Image (tube, rainbow, N blue to C red):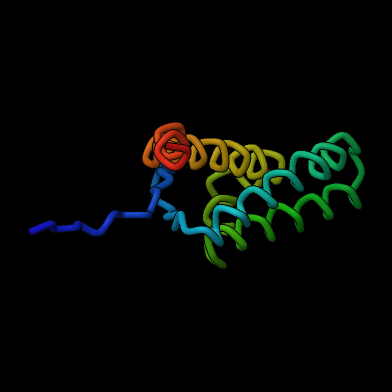
Length: 119
């Protein structure tokens, strides 16, 4: 008999007093890639402009990104954790995305999967 154990596809992201959970399914992985690319391109440009309109636009983008990836309450928690700094909340988001991608690749051993599928 072959027994298959269900794999856990939740990647926890630890902050000081709370944990966010990233559900690493196909849809959320694609969404995370899109969010990361958009933030790196547009967020970096906005962060360089030091006026109120740019900061407001950046804050909206950061809030939208946290909400898209982790749900409605995530942004408020991270924003408070960052000392109410949009730039720091964006930096945490980029760190989170990089960490989740790294964890996902380790868990799924992408190179082994590619080799297995090519044989």
